[in-house]
Length: 358
Length: 257
Image (cartoon, rainbow over all chains, first blue to last red; front, side, top):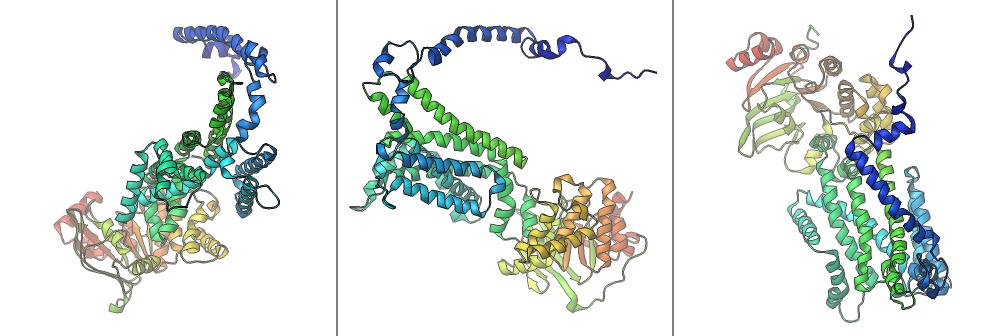
């Protein structure tokens, strides 16, 4: 007797292969068919001119005069000015130093991606790396020419503000979240006031305060580095948002976990460190990364207090009469840099989620 | 499970390990415990039953201060429960507890669940703590699961792990808060078996449970609670065969069909 199962019969041709896929995904129903046609037409009209503008008719290394007569994009605005865009007023001859510093940073970040390498030596590596970066940027020792922080700018400044901002804001946010759920009234009220106050103020006004109002309160002769002030403002601002996200995670931990920990005799710090936070922080990876990404992009707001981050250096290039008018190209370049950074973060968060089985 | 597994413990006043004197507790306006007087001796095994909301869980949760009482005295192993953190820590170190919903730590392996307390609270070296943990896992017959996570185990297995976790702290007293109520019927026995073996070793046990078979075979005393009071307290034989109070009779008729 011949056995027949469902597998024995080949599916109809219209259901498999390319034709099947097209039918299933592009033309299943009237609405989808219409949508497909509209989109194809749109791409047909927009695609070729866009590609011609971006690649075919574009100029990559010409003078600005040549650009004025070209039909395509003028990438020369980038190639002629990339050093200024990336490093701002950092002395031209010394720009290998911020480059090296960024390279060290990127290497450390790449190594830290792998959770299996989260050991003590990595912590030391970070310590060493940070010192190395500080020395490279600041100079003044080992025969390196000193460079004032007022001359720092471009991508190193953006990364500095973002990475240190986020690295400091996260622990602070966790502490604030714990504080807000504390049984001690003073700590609880303080945390709530802080969080609500900071969330009620736009980042721009905090940056203004740090730049203009805060120095008024300092005694005569005392000045605090402008970058540091902006950095603190970013940390304080981001921490408030992180606190609320983490609080959400804390609330998701069942009461039984606390009770089991108490019954075992764990104290508050141990309970939080060993039981509650590992579970809570795992839950809040996706919203945390959202906040980190938006905080990263928000660092560009420091332009309003006159710091030359990568957005401001780009604007400065465009303010130069020689390159005026090529803003699309410059901002596309800028967008690409931001996108690479943010996409890397979001990609890593998805990987973490997968590894931790959220 | 038929015959009673142990005779009454030698009872003397000095052996009292838990003493409640006129204990009251309120949740807001709700008067949960209304004057509890209770003495529990070393090695004694007590089963507490009663309708839901009668205060039986609250009663045993007061013993290790998961709940705070507002009036009266509770003395555990000679230490009175007050707001003094040192006292609370001392008592918690001597009292183990098993919960209805196991409350294992889901982000840690079974072995890590068991070694957490000994390593962090008792400051025992990890290797030694792991040895102890494996001994108790062996005892609850689950040693082969040591490297798994709680989520990969069945309810009955999880509850046995929870018992082992408590035992790793070498407690003098074990509290069980409805340990089998959240289990599928076919898993109740494996957990009760572990508890019976524990009883045979002379552990002081206070069990909130409606497992009447367990009460009959293991308990020295069965308490019936209703409306925040201990209505009846008797040996299992007397309790089941000749309940004194009308409410006890009604309750028993409802659960013993």
